[in-house]
Image (cartoon, rainbow, N blue to C red):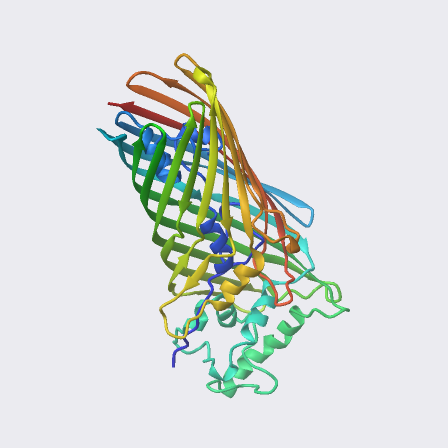
Length: 523
């Protein structure tokens, strides 16, 4: 007999807002939908405001109508160095962790195709690769508490299984149920495989029962949450996340009489998300039994890898009613992803009353689809003659619209989709930027707000703010731009959560800085 269960391979993330460390289906729906404005160092330095601008390869992603403003061909290359830091606090104990990652957020080629025919002045075809989301981060937390143990969570999860269907751990059987943490807890003797109603259920034998009973009677005391016995433990966890979302844009933008610019693009997206965690409990203490010490420590290691690709379309217009102003609109269709994830875990129970138990799972592979919400953006740009310009965008996104689906019989994502609609809401994101010009030199600054995606009733603020600044030099056939970005946002993390919503929660303050360079040649 083999158990087939649909697993949400999740380590619970409580109220995520910042890029980087979501494991549950609900949290991932937000994480993968909450992309940021990508593009060149020039655009990034201006807070990502670009819907009404044009003349930059970033238009292929944001508003392909902007490609219609090119008057020659161009190639660009954009490398960047990012630093991610997280300050965590758990029960008054503060920790800090950080890492540096080199990446390539953009490559582009724009081919100009001039033409003059009844007001149509031709246009440009562009191919670009843009980094639109960044999952990289690392954090840790620790603290001594009497809240609960992860074993309490294992016990709560395990009650949904029929004890009569569980084989003896002595049997050489690898069932899917043993590839999840509560199954590994059963194999390492952290949770009890028998009940009072069925003291040694089939296929257990009486000998099996006698082997268990000596220490399970003690184990019941170990996890006792009674009033008289207070249990304390030392909890630590280290989390490391890597990965990003990229989009390849195949775009065309046209020019009608230098007044109306139009465009469309096909977006091919890729997604790679890699989560690794090491969770540890140790130093167990009991108020009424100071000498009682059956378990030295337990450690749960988990790895989640999510890969996939998707497709979307973008349509846009830019209108120039007067020489000093432009108005732009852009519409991005929902992105349809086909995703595959792999979950694996290892649980070590280092006993003082018996030999240590170390069990690992086989990878659990899940395949499903995710449709992220559409986006509508509008913007305006005001030009200050030869001295530069000011521009701003607003973006409308409804974060309760992501939807999961599966082609696997008897597998439904309705509960997850309902929770997405319960927690998340529609938002308006804001971007503002400016560029000052003097001869061949450029100086830029910008501000970006990704608004709180949670409904007000949940009383949680998970907005992300980004400040950008940069400079550039423009020559006849060559240009170079640099940008520096600083983002910050808050989130909260929990390794596990009980059915009543309680569980240990660490507060996280997240910061990311990026130094970016774009080098381009025109011809």
